Image 1 (cartoon, helix red, strand yellow):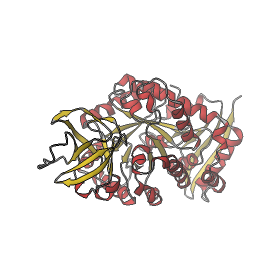
Image 2 (image 1 turned 180 degrees about the vertical axis):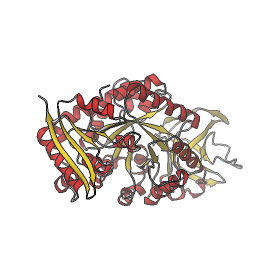
Image 3 (image 1 turned 60 degrees about the vertical axis):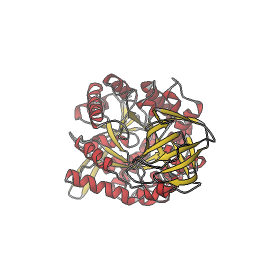
Image 4 (image 1 turned 90 degrees about the vertical axis):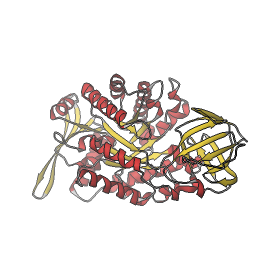
Length: 480
C-alpha cells in the first residue's frame, strides 16, 4: 500500500474503541505510525491481544508499526467513590462542599458528617505528609481540592473548589508531595517484564524526575533481558516541575522525550505549559533527541466528529515547531471516531508541512545544527544530503546499507522529504526508527525496492563499511 507522505509521525493510544483488527487496519491506513499501550488500564491478557491484533493488522496492510508500552509509574488513582456509604461509579462534586480523602487501607475514627468519600489507590502512604492549604487535583485538574480542618488517621477533610463529575480510576495529583512518591512500583516491574517478553519497541516511563530514573530503568531492562544491546528505546515522559528543572541531565541519557501536557498542566502553572512545550521541543532538537507532543490534541473528537479550531491550531503549532511526533490518547482509545481522529491528524500535518509557515519558522537550535553539522563522515554526509534536498526538492531520500547513526543524523536536520530506508531483515532498529521525523523504515528489501520504484525524483545514498570507516555513494535520480 502507499504510505502517507507526512513527515511528522502519529502515535495512537489503543483501547476499547479501536482494539479490533479491522479498526486497527483502518488506523494504520489513515496514518498511525506507533501504537501506545497504556498500562495504567487493562490487564496483561488484554494488552497481549492488542499486540497480536496490531501485528496482524500490520501484516494485512503491509505497513510497519512500532508498539509502545507506557508504564504507569507512581500514578495515584481513585479506587472507590462513595456517597452516604454507597459505592458509586461516578460522583458529582460541588463547589464549597467538604469531602473525605482517605487511604486505600482500612481506616477508623473518620468523621461521619462527611458523606462523600474518595479512597486512594496508592502503594505508599501520602496523606500523612499533606498539610492544611495543600491542593490536590482529580482527573488532570478537572476538580480541585484543598486540605482543610485537621488530619485524621488515614484521611483528610478536603474542600471542593469547583463543580464537576468524576469517575473511579481517574488520576489524582499531589503537586506538593512529589518527593514522597517512588519512581517505580511493583506493578511497573511486572508490566515491564511483560512488555519485554512481547518484544515491544519503546518503553515510556511516567513521572520521570531525573537522569537516575532513566538509567535505573535501562539497568532493569538489561537485567531482565540479559543483554545490553537491542533494548527498547526509553521515552521519558516530562510531566513534573522537577523533570523540567532536570531536563538537561534527562536529555543526556534518554532515547526519546514525551511532552506529557496533561499532568504537567496540573503539576505546574497551566498557563506556562505552551511555553514549556516549546522549550522542550527546542532542547530536544538541539540535543538530537526525538520528541513527542501529547495529551488532548484533538480532545473534542472523543465525542464529536470534528475538532475545535483551537485543537487544529494546537496540532499545527506542534508541526511548525518540528516535533518528531504528535499523539492521540482518548481520541482513539475510547472515543467515538478513532479512525477519523487519525485521518484528521494526518490532514492537519500534511497541510501544515506543505505551507510556507512550516519553513518560515527558523528555530535557532535547528538552524545552528544545520549550519554547523558534525565533523565526522556521517555528520558531513547528512549535511550534504540535507542541502541537496533543500535545493532539488526530491519527493524522497532513499537510504540503503547505511548505519542507524546516519539516518538519525539526517532526520535531526529535518529535511523536507521522507527518508526511505532498509536496514536488513530482522533488524531491531527497523520499528524503532518510526519515532524519528520523516523516517520510513522497511522490513524487507522487496518492499523497499517496490516503494523506491514508485518515485521518479529522489536522492539515493548507499553506504559501505571499509577498514577506514563508512563510505557513502550519493546520487540524484530524475526520471522526468
